[in-house]
Picture 1 (cartoon, rainbow over the protein chains, first blue to last red):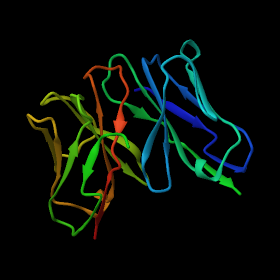
Picture 2: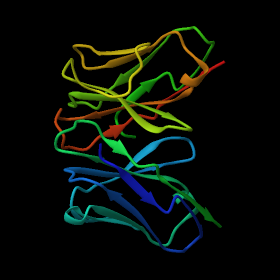
Picture 3: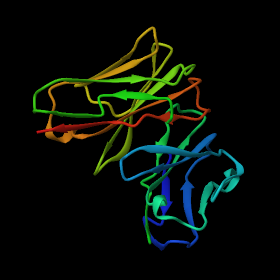
Picture 4: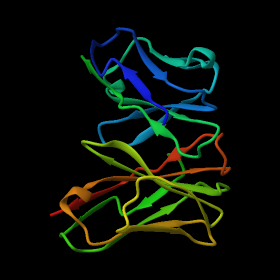
Length: 109
Length: 114
């Protein structure tokens, strides 16, 4: 099946710093989503981005489907950005959303 | 608030017992998905229903079953519970049943089996 790899696995930032999270996938996809799981366990939708670039405040994401990767940018990080960031993909032949193992982010004040 | 409602939020039970988790999808969404998140397995797809019919099946144990009712809410039944079933169970919904479209997740039901 399709493999979804996220890097780095762990990231510690000082408040105000910028970061880039990466998601590589092993096959063509027609659905890619980024989620933030906060310390309370909630999965929050960040982006639905099968291709192209989107921005939402301090966050932006880019998916290059032909090269099978997606990037999530976090600028001017805040302590509330802490948690785990998941990339998840779906192939055309499958209904299930497959999750990567996540990037655990800790933003220190 | 994603619009997906899950109950109960927390559940503590004993081995061998049976529990039912409930999910109400977003208004207008026809597909419901169940996921299990445990510490060692990450987020694993269990099963999907579309408009009352089973659409896709993942690594769901035989002790687990699910259904989607005519009002589109769904229930996940877990029986003969084992310690290893302790996990966060998520429900998600989407408008369509195909391979495109955005999924929205509920806040999860945290199950602890003692």
